[in-house]
Length: 446
Ligand SMILES: C[S@@+](CC[C@H](N)C(=O)[O-])C[C@H]1O[C@@H](n2cnc3c(N)ncnc32)[C@H](O)[C@@H]1O
Image (cartoon, rainbow, N blue to C red):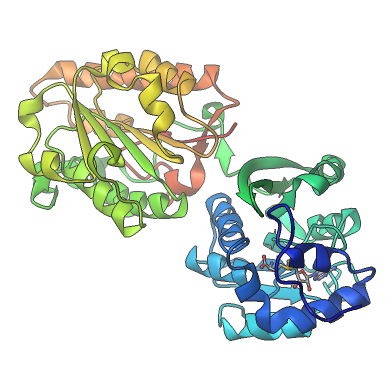
């Protein structure tokens, strides 16, 4: 067997792919990876770099805690570990057959432990060892790992733990069959392209058990851990809460939670119903830019709708990251036609903050013309305590609108229970419903 890795292959796929996948046994596979290690990152850069990070991003979107232990199974030189570290994970354990590959992973400085061994080899993972998350990128492939390793890894997840793996078409069916026989469920699947336009899949599978993160509205209470007496003072000076000098109607809990949600969920488009002055639209655009999401001209990643254009600060119209749309949120088919929605990159964050609208009709439009798994929908100002605290608001109609909105949201969520769930990780970040939005931070589940 030649030690040389071929330079290029036929049909778009790199030649090293056939070479590494053709190893006849684990001893030879280990020998090839050890031999290849120093050149691995350079050789795979054009074809593979980006895929482990993409899979790490998926795990980051589904696993809340950044301190819980996460295993990088078949860590290689640590490309997935770099992605996990960027997503905030700090308790990373790398496992790999090849000491040569692991030595390079160690140099990345992102793992707290490195372990040499084969996934399903007795004693490599402790009998009682459980991980909140496991990632395996480029590991379930010909000549590498299969059903036995998948079953082993699934068995080392803590209850409710999440496993993310990548798989090309050739092995996908066998892996999903194995997963179907295990106690858990597929949470998410993404598809991308590698090796000259071949499909590659990222599958996220959750082990059964553990407290559910995404729950139906019927499992939630209409209350908050924040005492009702705090509702007024935390929103009293709402007009003084500004971004770039422009008023935004956000309380302290939303100001603290939304940047984290946008970063962790890798939001690429924000749709805001109800611009008002526009401080929030500016803030969303700046937060997206911090996460590397920028747009220009017609491609601005924040779309914000206001029926009263006079209320919108000129700075909002001039921001390159914001598209200001003028019109009535009761006419979303005109303002956000299906063709426009089809072009907006996902994941989306949709925020309903207009209040005076037919909420079910607006949600139906978005549900049927674009919202997809992994998107977020936040229906703001759904706290009963805040309505009560502001009962002296001069325009009583607004209070009635918000009361109706809360009831409409509940009915709509019951009708769409399987698809829209409250994400308790963000909703309850500071305590149960600790926000002026109660039970309104929703993830699209399917
Ligand atoms: C294609 S590399 C992927 C490395 C890294 N995850 C990435 O995406 O760049 C596959 C890695 O899996 C390791 N590997 C293959 N079979 C394994 C097994 N049964 N147990 C542990 N590691 C294994 C190999 O040594 C190699 O480093």
